Image 1 (cartoon, rainbow, N blue to C red):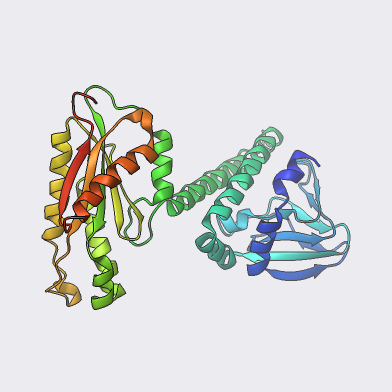
Image 2: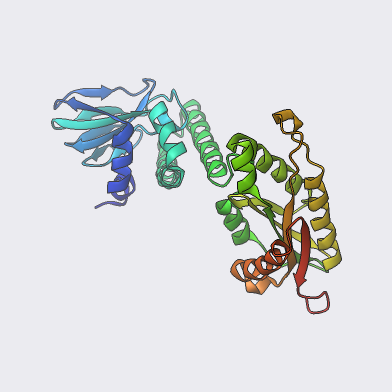
Amino acid sequence: MSDDAYIRRLSGAEMGSFCSVGTRCTVAAGQVLFRRGEIGQCMFIIDSGQIRLDFSGHMQNKTLGEREFFGELALFIGHHARMADAVAVTDCELWSVDQPGFDILLQSQPDRMVQFMRRSFSYLVASEQQLVLGLQRRNEDLIRAMESLRKTRGELTRAEDQVRTDDMTGLCNRRGLYAYLDDLTPPSGELQLGLLLIDLDRFKQINDQCGHMVGDEVLCAVAHVVNDATRNCDLACRLGGDEFALLCHVNTSGELCERANQILEGVRRLSFAEVDQPQLLASVSIGGGLCRYIDGWSVWYSDIDRALYSVKAIGGDGWHVAGLTDAEA
């Protein structure tokens, strides 16, 4: 199998995803599916048979087979002019996937769709390079092609942002945290890494007594307080449920204590009168500590989690910063 065929061949799982939102159609041998220059509205996947893409001499023609896809730019940037004629070499069974169907998959299966888009874009970049060589005297077409590429890159960035962001609070989620940790470098100068774990007190009771909509409002309000405690290069995230984290750069453990107290007091001042719960008082338990860069996230989390639950054990609504001393760090 050629590299092109490997890139454009869907896995069984991908095929199943697209078929779940696609429309099946039959194309007879010799039938033209679309012409170069037509505005595309959907992507096609071959279930059986073969399709030839004729680029009219600008690029090498391609013959695609079972489980290979084509016309995907119509999904990524919308209303894209087709770059080739698509003609059925044999009788074919195809699946067509339009923009609304792709949007459903992007929301319900973001990881799988981002991987599909990455693979597609790598193929598009290689195709664009071939196109540049064949269109040296056609500057207008070249400019349009590069603009299409820029739009697809922007779409990938937006998709990745969606995958790494918690929909409810707008903070990073665990994926965003792990991406941040992958790029994290040792602190410079006198700066040290500090971690705060923040857990809402009696959150199940809030949900049970006030309803889940009010519970969601409480989560969003606490997320805002945690985010307000960030500085440059810090990261606030929602780990899941009613648990938040703040990974920050501080000079001393005392500064980390100030951040913890800022969050604690900020949550205590929250008012929920706008959701008809003026009597509702929120509180959090916070554990914190300085972190050695070489230990990594799992060690940091385990150590700070013990500090958090020491606060929970005495009733919550407080903070405790433990771990390394400034001299040891």
